Image (cartoon, rainbow, N blue to C red):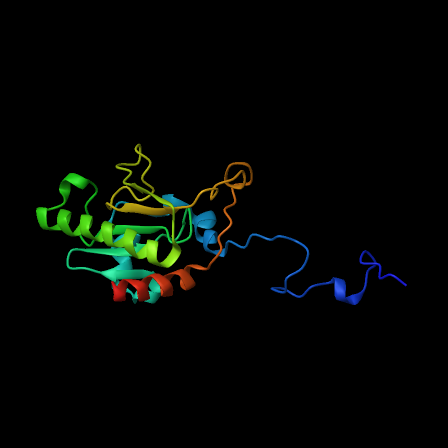
Length: 186
């Protein structure tokens, strides 16, 4: 007798985390954004996530590299897996506020971030960008940061637009481990 896969049995009720017939998109890292939004970050250094991150451990803050005047951190709200941010330690809002030495390191770390991401994730392209000021689209306008977003053909679909959901293939901690290890080897 053929098995009826539509019949309800005790096996039809999957335990949490056990694969089943549904394609669930787990994005727990987005909860902080949903609860507080980017408005939670004020202009003061005391609440600035980019000033607070270097005060914690690399694993806790998701910092993949610390330089002399700038550091590189995984974005808590990534557009794609491996989305990095290059940040100066100084709490400055504008690219023109960087010193010559900071500008050099900022650029060098951006280049290294691209090389490391190519090694770890084999992207087909990148988006690099800085949103300057709240009107320019900066979520944390008071502290300069540059996005390094790896891109793949077909990495964007209707979900972010229609469902405001982005499918992520790895957790932030897994991606942090891989990028930090590859950075140390570069």
